[in-house]
Amino acid sequence: MLTGSKKMRSNPAHLFWRLFLRRLGPPSPPTATALSHAGGPPDGHRRADWQARLASTVLGLATVALVATSGPPEYGYEFSTVLELPIVELTSAVPIVRYRLQARALGLAPNEAPTTAAATARFTGLITAEGVALEGSAPFVNVRLRPTASAPDDAGLLALTQFDLPATLVFEGDCARLIADPCEGELSLEFHRQDEGENGGTLRITSQIELNARVSKGENKPDEGPFELPWDIQVISQ
Image 1 (cartoon, rainbow, N blue to C red):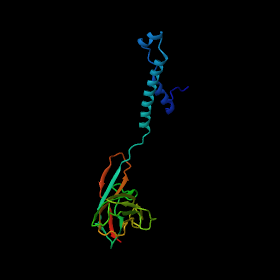
Image 2: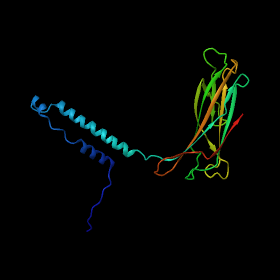
Image 3: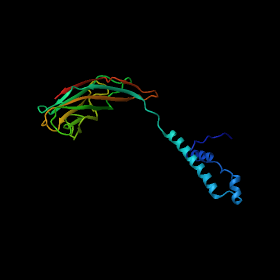
Image 4: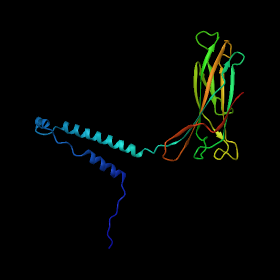
């Protein structure tokens, strides 16, 4: 007859309660002060002692459970490029200015993954007014940033002195291999002076657009970057 031992798998529920009871322990013995009041430990003392132990135990086990269930950190390659856009001057003759940003991927990440899967843009700028005949404040500028020129229109952002707009940059084409079709993305930018220039003067806008991308490394190593984006980026006036 064969004899031996069989190792049972750990049951998470059993392990939790075993740790719970081990950490909780028996109630503390009554103190001399408590016994002198009525010949034995008062209920309030025992209840407070048990509640304190229970709270400490639950807090400790919750911390352990949170650490145990948290997934490992995700590391990746960071890419970033900042473009200074031409200075824009909105006047009565030119109350609207539009640009189109075109990006074409030319290379992959160090791990041969595409850099276009999680691309974002951040459009920021400052607005200053000169010679505007308007009491109180300068006219507002409606600033828009859209994924493509054909995207559904939106209300944009009414800006007086500054703006900060985010957007997702969507690429289409052979972005995984960069062989068959061009991997390209596009953004549409617009500045629209809300008084159509009726109050004269000039609204001068200095702006920049920051393009960012992140590629998962799939390995337990620290983040790397930011690197310059391996893209060809063009800003075209419309």
